[in-house]
Amino acid sequence: MNKKILLVITFACLNTANFAQQIKIDITNTVSTKAALFSLNGERFSFVDSIFTSAPGKFNYSDKNLIHGFYRLSFDVQKSITLLHDGEEVEITANAENISESIHIVTSVSNKFYFKFLNLSKSYKTKTELLQLILARYPKDDDYYKITQEKFVQLQKEYSEFVENSIKSNPNSFIARYIQSARLPIVVFNLPLDKQRVFLKTHALDNLNFNDAQLIYSDAFTNKTIEYLTYYRNPQLPMDLLEKEFIFAVDTILNKAKVNQIVYQHIVEYLIDGFKKFGFDKVIDYIVENYVIKDDLCLDAKTESSIQRRIDQSKKLSVGVVVPNIKLQSADGKEIDLSKIKSDKVLILFYASWCPHCQTLLPQIFGLYNSQKVRKTEVLAISIDTSKADWLNFIKTYNLNWLNVSDLMGWEGKAATDYFIYATPTMFLIDSEKK
Image (cartoon, rainbow, N blue to C red; front, side):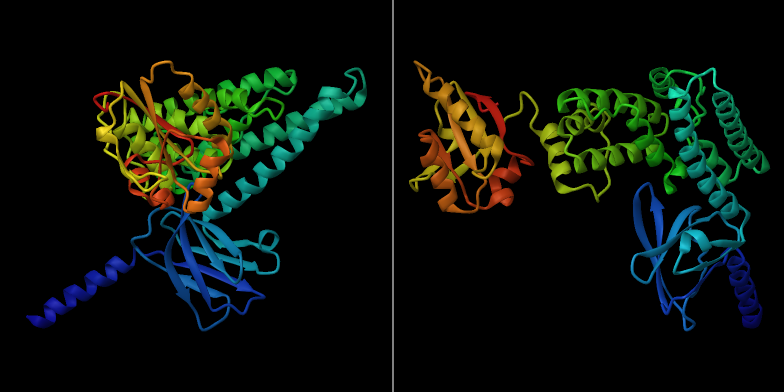
């Protein structure tokens, strides 16, 4: 009886192992015997496992729990290979000295399609952009103009045929769905450049399947998002107008993405991360107010603390809410208690001596504060400095004789934490009931 049970268990284990498809990567010109496998989620890479080998450059891996999607095998220093896992055997060879030029797919139809699509898209984009410049400036009555037109049409035809044939070969496969969504838009080449941009703003997202949640394990959504934003980018515009343009683009993208909650959240996180890197705070605030808070999105734990504070501040300190009490030491050592300030209104002002905007804004606010004939609005100025000397020097320099307080604990002080302060200056105007 025990032998039968053992036999059944053994057979079951072997049968399960059949679903763990092998990933084999053979790298020449490397002495590395260790690699790391990461899964791709947009532009984020999550560690999956370490791979060890006794033979340098020969990395084998299998795990039946691997989700279908893109992965990156990293080895040596800043060297890597991106590959697609969709349940079939994968075998790839490459030379560590020149990976992009030497990569060869031995086994895996999906990866063959992927790398061909990648190279073709890159080539198509480069060539058509150059040809567009020629067509926009070259005399139309010249023979070379006609030759350029014909070349452009040929490139479009070749690209479209490859995409369509790749999709038709196995329409439900991960790679077919990826190519369908990641394909570059085909523009009518004889349109003026300004009308081409209008066309792209209207149609560039047509092929992107926002309802395919599995594609978050690729760069399809993030690449298409950044591609779409470039149609609204204009370096000649001042920051305010550029942010308005990006907000319009954000509305278009996110309203399409709402068809699938997973995809929607995936793109929101990507947009917040991206706009934060480039300092577009108004766009971030707009996304937070109109999408994250309005639709009660729960962002990834990796979202930076400053963004999370921004979200929490908007959610928990909205109009009409009684604010947390504040008890802090003043510049002359006395305790100031917000709940005991008797005034029609109190402006709670968080700032820092090193903040350029604070150096401009606070003297202006102090001018308004001093201009009150009857003081109905008090100012509680809370410094998030960590240096007492810097704090006191700032007060003295601008002669700010309102209520100055600080715990000299920076962003981690109790008041800064209670009010979810993520930037300076930040102000809250409250009434006599501390709302």
